[in-house]
Image 1: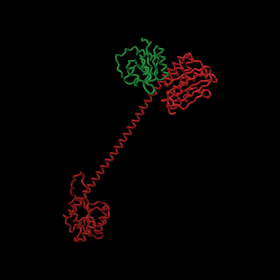
Image 2: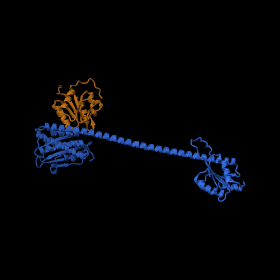
Image 3: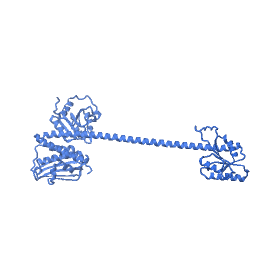
Image 4: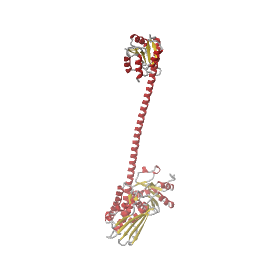
Length: 129
Length: 390
């Protein structure tokens, strides 16, 4: 069991109600929430002064997508979880192997995914795409 | 009257097809002379036609083309000169060389008359077969060469026409192919477009279900009883539904801010215009902004009905907006005439949702002023990307 105290999770989600729900779910589980950010620009701004352990990323952000912030997170070896209404096939090939939680999500599935990435060994090396 | 020599035709070197035989018209009223001429010419191997008068000869000329006419000058009725003038006068026969056969003296008078009638040559009777054959064979050769040239020209013309026809067919086939390709491309495009639309629809449905889930969980967290949860939840979903209906009516393009405000309020609040006033210039909103503001108006109205100026009989709400010089929209919700307002001890789900819709969805800001005389909400958000064709 991974301790969640002081584990910080960056949430990137442009839909206000979903962002609010994610924040509530994660905080109730004892995590610190960074954000929620509604765009890659807002996420990058947060990353200037914070270094989250996990990033929970909505793929579609209005007119753009989240991949603008993914390279930075991969370079930092932040653990990623994608959150999307699309299937994994819609993700770029380079990211299809990463954990994905489907929308609409069940709270316990979401929290399990967070637990799972936290319990994984830090990869020895992963090249930034 | 017509005989065909059965001598073998020389084989043309230029084509595999033998050139047609030349026809020679012999015009003489004297049977013996006609026979002598025919005998002399038989070995040329051409078609020999004998006419015994000028009239008969002209009749012959109506039906066939001839390489040369051997014409007796002195005939009863129409004589050679007269007949020659007819031959020369007609367009179809004008080109046929005429060789006069004459027993007359070779004096200048006769020669002049003969040549002016259109003769190209003269042969004197009694006919010398060798001389006659030599002269006629020149015209036969000339005729056959001309015929050959004509035939080649026709062949060339035919080939050219065939070439044009084949090219036209090729062009037609290419056009048909292109149309078919264009049709297939259009079909493929339409199918791709449809796939995109279905994917987009799937995504929107999943997103909306997620929003509904979030709405349910967050409403539940702030509800003291199942009854209040059901009431609040259903009203929130209903408000979302009304904004969706408005967007559907406008084909999910741009909608007017005043319509979003009116549609997200309970219908009875608008029946009595004196209670809720909506005032501002035409502002077009994109669907995302419209949905966000629909939620905001619903949350504010619900609060006003429960705790604010719409909870008594006289209170009022004024919704007013104006674009400012920075390209932002200032939007105010002002309550008056309600019970005295006290600042809540902690912010409820409604006010948190309003804040998040403004900051998260609209990249704007919001201030809630709990003035004792009435709640005042000042909202401000950039219009640049949200202003539609107003």
